[in-house]
Length: 292
Image 1: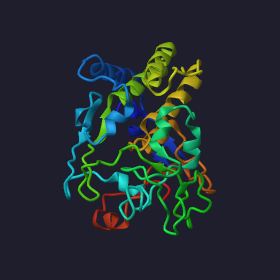
Image 2 (image 1 turned 60 degrees about the horizontal axis):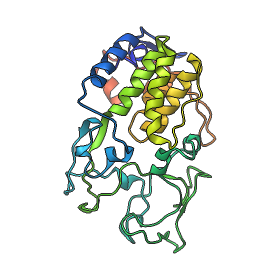
Image 3 (image 1 turned 180 degrees about the horizontal axis):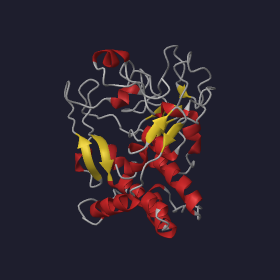
Image 4 (image 1 turned 45 degrees about the horizontal axis):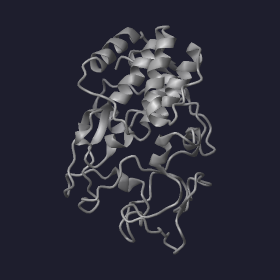
């Protein structure tokens, strides 16, 4: 809430966002309350936070609980995996893919990129070759040539939450992570940088990055402007598939300016969605958001 205060207390007009009051000191104080509590610690391996038994993670702070039982489990894996990804006839819905531009922004030696499935695919549980529906070896391609007519192998796939070997059908035991210590560190780094304490922000950022690179690969950013960009990039690498990106891009000011799949930038007022007409019809006190 505090890192997004300028957005949440701002005003959106047809010209875009007019930012409200910043609360960086509050953001820093809140992050330090968590970091100094000693209740949580970074897991040496980031994968531990998303495993089927991630209820034992020392890093996860707030999660949605799941258990491998019909109607009680987690199955976001199924939204990305191919129809045959687990074993022939046992797989996902072949849906979500990672935007090619985002995938290419990962450093090739960043271990977090390995949680995205690219290239030739082998079965999740037994390592056998996976085939597409035409009987060809399944090879996930980075680019989607036509977003309205993609073939079943186009697009690399999110695989941050691994399949649970004890799954019940498509229901897995992985808890869905809402907040974890890695993000608290990024909040602290962002607040420090915005408060002009850039050297301290770099130190926090590099502590988090050290987990994902061997040997460690500190950020090359040094100025406040460059560190600000580095922090937003790090939020992409660290928090991809955790439901943070849209909020981050609105705060960063890049949500409506991105050009993906050949589409042009959107009007800046579209950081707010329109109020549906049925709600406007039944409540005369509502006013449609600017631009719609």
